[in-house]
Length: 150
Image (cartoon, rainbow, N blue to C red; front, side, top):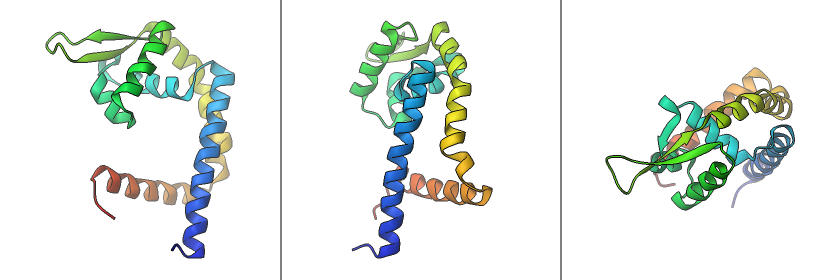
């Protein structure tokens, strides 16, 4: 079993991450009419050369299933934010491509999103706490990405 300190840390992290995800997502929807998933995809595409990423690579980056990403891209494409483009040298491959409307929406929404993250997360912590949390997150992510066993 987890001892009291371990259990407090684990449960607090679970509760914090869920509440934070919900609140920031709620703010994003209210301020920009984007879902958290929309915003996440737009950010990834905006940070990629030519605003395009192979669908399989994007799914990996987001830790999403290919099916989930495909449905998300279809919803966003119907709103003109992105498009799906066939890969010219791989009949099975496709790219997610940022459309001008998606970039415009991202640029419009980003300041409010950053303000929400600051209000609900960054400004609640000291610089030392942020550094420690970043170190902890990096360690756990590296462990999970390397597939190390417990």
